[in-house]
Structure formats: structure tokens, C-alpha cells
Image (cartoon, rainbow over all chains, first blue to last red; front, side, top):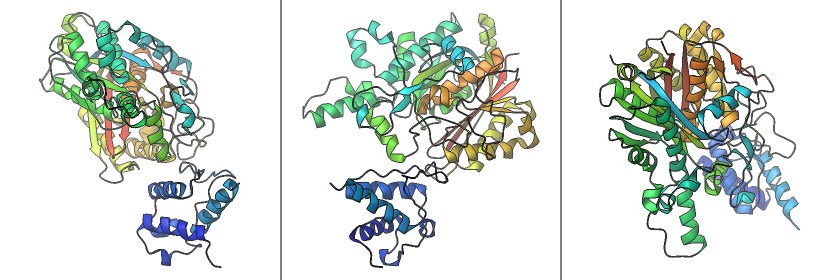
Length: 92
Length: 399
């Protein structure tokens, strides 16, 4: 499936944070495969918030008990879906 | 070898504005955490903290003192005055001052950035620099009480207080000063202070629950605690009442991650403190844990305690008092030393508040939710800072 504009932006941000080529990042990939730790993820989410002017609910303290509204950060695709939903919810 | 004892203590924090009130609150299991109230707090996503309220000390200051003292200096000054009064006549003779702080005069930075950036003004008050400098608190304590010994500021994030107290202990033990005022002061509960921490996503939106399975981050606090440390023979010659002995100090650096604490670094600092104190693990009855309430700190700290204490961990009480006074960052070790003194001197162990669900990773006796009567002969106080800096104090009950 072709990536959305949002998906491409999110991958670009995650890849820049992980210092990897965005072309090699798949939606099914897990973040730890790129060496992205919780601090790297916090920085990437900040960049995503700035890029789309949204607030992303994410607490790295609660990886095992994310609430229904929290971002699924297990895979690249999970992050993209979550960000798309947040942007859709923001749209007037 | 000179021995170093504590003969005075003072504090201002969210629990109370003095030492007796703070001990009473810790013993009663009260928490100082509430809704944050300051300018622009409505623009924060984290709205809770352990904030000092109703404190009128500053009203008696002269206009010049008003313009010279950032809140962190005010907290330190009030705590130092209480500690010196408790230590009695002659305690300050020849003393120096070491005060730990992580952010120093952050209120002053914030106010003046507002003036020049937000309000577009081109002038700031002339005393801005001496008001915001990290050593302002230490210098003003010395100036008020005529303390001319070794005096400087210590800054190592959340270990600032323990580094300051540990260094003061060594200055006395090694003969550089007969007495020291040492502790920490922090006043980060302002818009820019919380906003910066918010970005790191380590703050809990709903409460501080150290060692609990439900924990989801730390809650910030503020305030100061200052102690009079004194060479033992001089303290006895003055007829001072000895609250406890500082017997050892251990400090290590993880040299690993900038924010994630390591088990090995924490364990090595505890071992070093025990070794300097000449204490066996079995002799420690109480540990005031760093216990921030983040997933990783509490899990790693418990693992480090197991590594150092082995079977002796079963006989330990390990509480975190941060759910009471909040995580006061550079002042936190000093506030927590009060809990250690209460344990050694009064036989009251301050509880871990907010411990509502057992976590298999945090399986020590964490003294959940209610204070306990016990008479430990020795205690440790742990501080583990961002930057991987570990500082552990070892204390012995007064003989």
C-alpha cells in the first residue's frame, strides 16, 4: 500500500532521528530495530508535534499500559496510524 | 580520623515551613502535592507539583533583599537560619557553606526573559546577575551569618544536595573546616521549569507512586533543607545535641546514558559509601531511596540494592519520600536526609506514599503508605542524577 503524505513525513522524522535511510523503513518495522530508544522516540515525537501542530499523547513511563487514546509506538505503522488519526481529529 | 556529626537542620518545603512540621507531615503520611498555581500554569499539560504555599518569610525582607533574593535563595536562607538556631551558640564559627542546586535562580531568568523577549523592553533590573547566579544561596547564607570558611555551589542535577553534603563531610573530616552548612535549594516550580521537564515526558500527570506497579512518572517539588555539619569533638565541647553521624559518602558516574540510570553505577556508589563508613550491609536498617516513581529508576534502584545487600536486603526498609515532598531536584537529597535523621534520631520511618499496587520488580519492604516505628542503627540516602551521577550518604545513629 502506498504511503500517505503524513506517513512519508513521519518516516522522514523517525529516520532522521535514528540516522537511517528513510527508504529502508517499513511500516511493519519495530523501532528498536533502528536503535531508537525512549529518549530518541521522545525527540521524534516532539518533531512530529511541531511538524503537524498536534499534541501526541505518549508517556514513555507506561509502555505496558498505554491507554486507548495513547499512541501505539510498537511499530512504524502504529505511529503513522496514530498520527493520522490525531490529524484527522484536529481537522475542522 | 575526625568524625562528622549533624547538629542542626532546617527546611522549607511543600509539607511545612520548618523542620518539626516536616517531620510531623512525613510521620503522618501527608503529601504536599497539589494543583500548581503560578503565571501561565494553564499552558502546561502537567498541572501538579509539591508547591510551597502560604509562606510569608519574604514579607519581612528589605527592598534591597527583595531585589537580591531569587526564591531558591530565600528557601536556602530560611532553612539555614533554622539549622543554625538548632545547632546553638558557636556552631557557625569557622564554618563554610555548600549548597546544591540544579537550576539556581530560574525564576529570575524567566522573569527577565519575559521582560526582554515577551514584553520587548530593553532594560532588566541591575541586580539580575547576582540574583540568578548558582552560588547566590551559598553566598547569602555566609553573608547573613558571617561564615567565612570554604563556600561554593554544587550542581549535579538530582544529586546536587548529596554531592554538597558529601563534600562538606569530607572538608570537615580532612581538616579544611571545623563545621559546614550544607544542603540544597531548588525553585523550579515556574512555567519554564515545568515546561522543560514536560518535554522530557518523565512527569506524571496524576501522581507520584514510587515502587508501585501503577507508577507513571515523577512529580516535581521545591524548597530547601540545610544542615549544620560539625567535627564531633567540637560539637561535644560546645554541648551541642548530636542528631546523627555522617559516616561515609560514595560517588560514582555511570558514563553511560544521559538520562537512564545504570544498576552498576548505583550499586558501586552504595558500596563506596558503606566502605568509607566501615558499615556492613547487615548494619543498615533503612534506605531513603531515590525512588522517583519512573518505571526505570525504581526498577534499577531495587536491582542495585539487591546486588549490594544480597540476603541482607530482606532486613531493610526502603522508602521513597518523593510522593510527600515531591522531587525537589537539586534540593531533594537534602529533604530526604530529614527522613533519614527522623529514622535514626526519632525511630520513625517515613512511608512510601502512593504505593497502591505491588510491582514484582520492586520487591523490598517499601514501608507502604504508613509510617512505622523502628530503631535502625544506620541508614543510606540515595541520589541518582541525570548525567549518570550517583551520590550516596551513609549515616549512623548518634552514639
